[in-house]
Amino acid sequence: MKKTINYLFTLLAAMSLGLSSCSSDDEGLCNENEPPVETPQDTPQQEMVTVTDAKKSIRTDVMSLPYHELTFASKNDVEKPCLVLYLHGGSSRGDDNETQMKEAGIDSISNYLKAHHKNAIFLVPQCPLKGAWLGPAQGVLGTLIAQYMNEAKVDAKQIYVFGGSMGGTGTWGMLAAYPDLFAAAMPVAADPTKVGDYTSKTPVLSVMGTADVIMSLKTAQTFVENLEAQGIETRFEIGEGWTHEVTCIESYTTSRLDWVFSHKCN
Image (cartoon, rainbow, N blue to C red; front, side, top):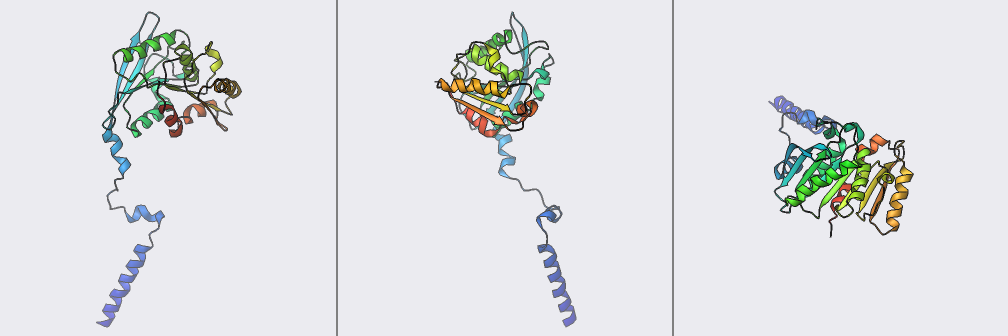
Protein backbone atom coordinates (compact mmCIF):
# COMPACT_ATOMS: atom_id res chain seq x y z
CA MET A 1 0.00 0.00 0.00
CA LYS A 2 2.81 2.42 0.91
CA LYS A 3 4.48 1.65 -2.41
CA THR A 4 1.25 2.49 -4.23
CA ILE A 5 0.85 5.80 -2.38
CA ASN A 6 4.49 6.71 -3.00
CA TYR A 7 4.04 5.93 -6.66
CA LEU A 8 0.96 8.17 -6.91
CA PHE A 9 2.79 11.07 -5.23
CA THR A 10 5.71 10.60 -7.63
CA LEU A 11 3.36 10.56 -10.62
CA LEU A 12 1.49 13.68 -9.50
CA ALA A 13 4.76 15.52 -8.90
CA ALA A 14 5.99 14.61 -12.35
CA MET A 15 2.75 15.81 -13.94
CA SER A 16 3.00 19.08 -12.01
CA LEU A 17 6.53 19.66 -13.26
CA GLY A 18 5.51 18.86 -16.81
CA LEU A 19 2.67 21.41 -16.75
CA SER A 20 4.76 24.16 -15.16
CA SER A 21 7.50 23.72 -17.75
CA CYS A 22 5.33 25.04 -20.63
CA SER A 23 7.16 28.16 -21.88
CA SER A 24 5.84 30.91 -24.13
CA ASP A 25 7.23 28.93 -27.06
CA ASP A 26 5.03 25.99 -26.10
CA GLU A 27 1.93 28.09 -25.52
CA GLY A 28 0.21 26.96 -28.68
CA LEU A 29 0.58 23.31 -27.65
CA CYS A 30 -0.42 23.90 -24.04
CA ASN A 31 -3.62 25.70 -25.05
CA GLU A 32 -4.48 23.86 -28.23
CA ASN A 33 -7.78 22.60 -26.79
CA GLU A 34 -8.81 25.94 -25.30
CA PRO A 35 -11.04 28.39 -27.20
CA PRO A 36 -9.30 31.61 -28.33
CA VAL A 37 -9.55 34.51 -25.92
CA GLU A 38 -11.64 37.32 -27.34
CA THR A 39 -9.82 40.61 -26.83
CA PRO A 40 -11.65 43.97 -26.82
CA GLN A 41 -10.16 45.07 -30.12
CA ASP A 42 -11.45 41.97 -31.88
CA THR A 43 -15.10 43.02 -31.76
CA PRO A 44 -15.98 46.70 -31.25
CA GLN A 45 -14.53 48.00 -34.49
CA GLN A 46 -16.73 45.75 -36.64
CA GLU A 47 -19.79 46.36 -34.47
CA MET A 48 -19.39 50.11 -34.01
CA VAL A 49 -18.61 51.10 -37.62
CA THR A 50 -20.41 49.92 -40.73
CA VAL A 51 -18.80 50.47 -44.12
CA THR A 52 -20.62 50.46 -47.45
CA ASP A 53 -18.90 50.70 -50.82
CA ALA A 54 -20.76 52.00 -53.87
CA LYS A 55 -19.41 52.36 -57.40
CA LYS A 56 -20.44 55.64 -58.98
CA SER A 57 -19.40 58.10 -61.68
CA ILE A 58 -19.62 61.81 -62.35
CA ARG A 59 -19.99 63.21 -65.84
CA THR A 60 -19.45 66.82 -66.89
CA ASP A 61 -18.96 68.52 -70.25
CA VAL A 62 -15.23 68.04 -69.77
CA MET A 63 -14.93 64.37 -68.81
CA SER A 64 -16.36 61.47 -66.89
CA LEU A 65 -14.73 60.11 -63.75
CA PRO A 66 -15.68 56.80 -62.13
CA TYR A 67 -15.23 56.64 -58.38
CA HIS A 68 -15.83 54.58 -55.27
CA GLU A 69 -17.90 56.06 -52.47
CA LEU A 70 -17.05 54.42 -49.15
CA THR A 71 -19.41 55.43 -46.35
CA PHE A 72 -18.30 54.96 -42.75
CA ALA A 73 -21.19 55.11 -40.26
CA SER A 74 -20.30 55.00 -36.57
CA LYS A 75 -22.72 54.31 -33.74
CA ASN A 76 -20.57 56.50 -31.48
CA ASP A 77 -20.21 59.53 -33.75
CA VAL A 78 -23.28 61.75 -34.06
CA GLU A 79 -21.55 64.41 -36.16
CA LYS A 80 -22.20 64.91 -39.86
CA PRO A 81 -19.66 62.91 -41.90
CA CYS A 82 -16.37 64.43 -42.94
CA LEU A 83 -15.47 64.17 -46.63
CA VAL A 84 -12.20 62.51 -47.62
CA LEU A 85 -10.80 62.62 -51.16
CA TYR A 86 -7.95 60.32 -52.19
CA LEU A 87 -6.10 60.79 -55.49
CA HIS A 88 -4.19 57.76 -56.77
CA GLY A 89 -0.85 57.56 -58.55
CA GLY A 90 -0.17 57.26 -62.27
CA SER A 91 -0.07 53.46 -62.42
CA SER A 92 -3.72 53.24 -61.31
CA ARG A 93 -5.17 55.21 -64.21
CA GLY A 94 -7.90 53.59 -66.31
CA ASP A 95 -11.67 53.19 -66.54
CA ASP A 96 -12.38 49.94 -64.68
CA ASN A 97 -13.08 51.74 -61.36
CA GLU A 98 -11.11 49.04 -59.56
CA THR A 99 -7.38 49.45 -60.13
CA GLN A 100 -7.18 52.58 -57.98
CA MET A 101 -8.58 50.70 -54.98
CA LYS A 102 -5.41 48.59 -54.70
CA GLU A 103 -3.27 51.44 -53.38
CA ALA A 104 -2.03 50.95 -49.82
CA GLY A 105 -2.95 54.48 -48.76
CA ILE A 106 -6.65 53.70 -49.19
CA ASP A 107 -6.47 50.78 -46.76
CA SER A 108 -4.48 52.83 -44.25
CA ILE A 109 -6.98 55.69 -44.26
CA SER A 110 -9.96 53.29 -44.18
CA ASN A 111 -8.52 51.42 -41.21
CA TYR A 112 -7.94 54.71 -39.41
CA LEU A 113 -11.53 55.85 -39.96
CA LYS A 114 -12.83 52.53 -38.63
CA ALA A 115 -10.48 52.41 -35.65
CA HIS A 116 -11.43 55.96 -34.63
CA HIS A 117 -15.16 55.39 -35.17
CA LYS A 118 -15.49 58.35 -37.53
CA ASN A 119 -18.47 59.18 -39.69
CA ALA A 120 -16.99 59.77 -43.12
CA ILE A 121 -17.62 59.65 -46.84
CA PHE A 122 -14.44 58.55 -48.57
CA LEU A 123 -14.22 59.25 -52.32
CA VAL A 124 -11.67 57.46 -54.50
CA PRO A 125 -11.96 58.55 -58.16
CA GLN A 126 -10.05 57.03 -61.06
CA CYS A 127 -8.17 59.23 -63.51
CA PRO A 128 -8.47 58.41 -67.25
CA LEU A 129 -5.66 56.37 -68.78
CA LYS A 130 -4.00 59.33 -70.50
CA GLY A 131 -5.10 61.93 -67.98
CA ALA A 132 -3.67 63.64 -64.91
CA TRP A 133 -5.10 65.19 -61.76
CA LEU A 134 -3.91 68.64 -62.82
CA GLY A 135 -5.95 70.60 -65.35
CA PRO A 136 -9.51 69.63 -66.38
CA ALA A 137 -9.81 66.87 -63.78
CA GLN A 138 -9.61 69.49 -61.03
CA GLY A 139 -12.85 71.05 -62.23
CA VAL A 140 -14.62 67.68 -62.23
CA LEU A 141 -13.35 66.91 -58.73
CA GLY A 142 -14.53 70.31 -57.56
CA THR A 143 -17.98 69.61 -59.00
CA LEU A 144 -18.04 66.22 -57.26
CA ILE A 145 -17.21 67.73 -53.87
CA ALA A 146 -19.77 70.50 -54.41
CA GLN A 147 -22.50 67.91 -54.96
CA TYR A 148 -21.92 66.41 -51.53
CA MET A 149 -21.76 69.86 -49.94
CA ASN A 150 -24.89 71.16 -51.68
CA GLU A 151 -26.87 68.08 -50.67
CA ALA A 152 -25.73 68.62 -47.06
CA LYS A 153 -24.31 65.11 -46.93
CA VAL A 154 -21.04 66.18 -45.30
CA ASP A 155 -19.60 68.70 -42.87
CA ALA A 156 -18.25 71.49 -45.05
CA LYS A 157 -15.69 72.31 -42.35
CA GLN A 158 -14.15 68.84 -42.56
CA ILE A 159 -13.05 68.18 -46.13
CA TYR A 160 -9.66 66.54 -46.58
CA VAL A 161 -7.53 65.56 -49.56
CA PHE A 162 -4.78 62.94 -49.77
CA GLY A 163 -2.68 61.52 -52.58
CA GLY A 164 0.61 59.92 -53.51
CA SER A 165 2.92 60.41 -56.52
CA MET A 166 0.74 61.79 -59.34
CA GLY A 167 -2.03 61.93 -56.74
CA GLY A 168 0.25 63.82 -54.37
CA THR A 169 0.96 66.43 -57.01
CA GLY A 170 -2.79 66.43 -57.70
CA THR A 171 -3.35 67.12 -54.00
CA TRP A 172 -1.17 70.22 -54.24
CA GLY A 173 -3.12 71.11 -57.38
CA MET A 174 -6.47 70.85 -55.58
CA LEU A 175 -5.18 73.20 -52.88
CA ALA A 176 -4.12 75.67 -55.56
CA ALA A 177 -7.44 75.39 -57.42
CA TYR A 178 -9.62 75.56 -54.28
CA PRO A 179 -7.54 77.50 -51.73
CA ASP A 180 -10.31 77.80 -49.11
CA LEU A 181 -12.06 74.45 -49.48
CA PHE A 182 -10.01 71.95 -47.49
CA ALA A 183 -9.47 71.67 -43.74
CA ALA A 184 -6.08 69.97 -44.26
CA ALA A 185 -4.15 68.02 -46.87
CA MET A 186 -1.48 65.36 -47.10
CA PRO A 187 0.49 65.22 -50.38
CA VAL A 188 2.95 62.31 -50.49
CA ALA A 189 5.95 61.87 -52.82
CA ALA A 190 4.84 64.87 -54.87
CA ASP A 191 6.05 67.95 -56.75
CA PRO A 192 4.23 71.12 -55.62
CA THR A 193 6.01 73.31 -58.18
CA LYS A 194 3.90 71.88 -61.03
CA VAL A 195 0.63 73.43 -59.83
CA GLY A 196 1.17 77.06 -60.86
CA ASP A 197 -0.07 79.94 -58.68
CA TYR A 198 -0.49 78.83 -55.09
CA THR A 199 -2.35 81.02 -52.60
CA SER A 200 -3.86 78.42 -50.26
CA LYS A 201 -3.31 78.73 -46.52
CA THR A 202 -4.58 75.20 -45.87
CA PRO A 203 -2.54 73.23 -43.30
CA VAL A 204 -0.36 70.74 -45.15
CA LEU A 205 1.59 67.65 -44.12
CA SER A 206 4.07 66.62 -46.83
CA VAL A 207 6.06 63.38 -46.78
CA MET A 208 9.07 62.65 -49.00
CA GLY A 209 11.66 59.86 -49.15
CA THR A 210 15.42 60.31 -49.28
CA ALA A 211 15.78 57.56 -51.88
CA ASP A 212 13.01 58.87 -54.15
CA VAL A 213 14.52 59.35 -57.62
CA ILE A 214 11.20 60.35 -59.22
CA MET A 215 10.19 63.31 -57.07
CA SER A 216 12.71 65.77 -55.62
CA LEU A 217 12.80 65.93 -51.83
CA LYS A 218 14.67 69.23 -51.91
CA THR A 219 12.12 70.85 -54.23
CA ALA A 220 9.21 69.85 -52.00
CA GLN A 221 11.09 70.84 -48.84
CA THR A 222 11.89 74.33 -50.16
CA PHE A 223 8.27 74.82 -51.20
CA VAL A 224 6.96 73.83 -47.77
CA GLU A 225 9.54 75.99 -46.00
CA ASN A 226 8.33 78.98 -48.03
CA LEU A 227 4.77 78.26 -46.91
CA GLU A 228 5.90 78.07 -43.30
CA ALA A 229 7.68 81.41 -43.68
CA GLN A 230 4.31 82.88 -44.68
CA GLY A 231 2.80 81.68 -41.41
CA ILE A 232 0.97 78.71 -42.92
CA GLU A 233 0.76 75.64 -40.71
CA THR A 234 2.90 72.89 -42.23
CA ARG A 235 4.69 69.67 -41.43
CA PHE A 236 7.44 68.27 -43.62
CA GLU A 237 8.52 64.75 -42.81
CA ILE A 238 11.24 62.61 -44.36
CA GLY A 239 11.38 58.86 -44.74
CA GLU A 240 15.04 57.90 -44.42
CA GLY A 241 15.99 55.48 -47.19
CA TRP A 242 12.46 55.44 -48.58
CA THR A 243 12.08 55.02 -52.33
CA HIS A 244 9.23 56.61 -54.24
CA GLU A 245 7.11 53.48 -53.91
CA VAL A 246 7.87 52.94 -50.23
CA THR A 247 6.98 56.56 -49.47
CA CYS A 248 3.59 56.11 -51.12
CA ILE A 249 2.96 52.96 -49.06
CA GLU A 250 4.35 53.79 -45.61
CA SER A 251 3.46 57.45 -45.13
CA TYR A 252 -0.08 57.10 -43.79
CA THR A 253 0.74 56.51 -40.13
CA THR A 254 -1.68 57.04 -37.25
CA SER A 255 0.18 60.11 -35.96
CA ARG A 256 0.11 61.78 -39.37
CA LEU A 257 -3.55 60.99 -39.92
CA ASP A 258 -4.27 62.28 -36.40
CA TRP A 259 -2.69 65.57 -37.42
CA VAL A 260 -4.68 65.87 -40.64
CA PHE A 261 -8.06 64.98 -39.13
CA SER A 262 -7.52 67.27 -36.14
CA HIS A 263 -8.10 70.28 -38.40
CA LYS A 264 -11.37 71.97 -39.28
CA CYS A 265 -12.09 75.01 -41.41
CA ASN A 266 -13.08 78.16 -39.51
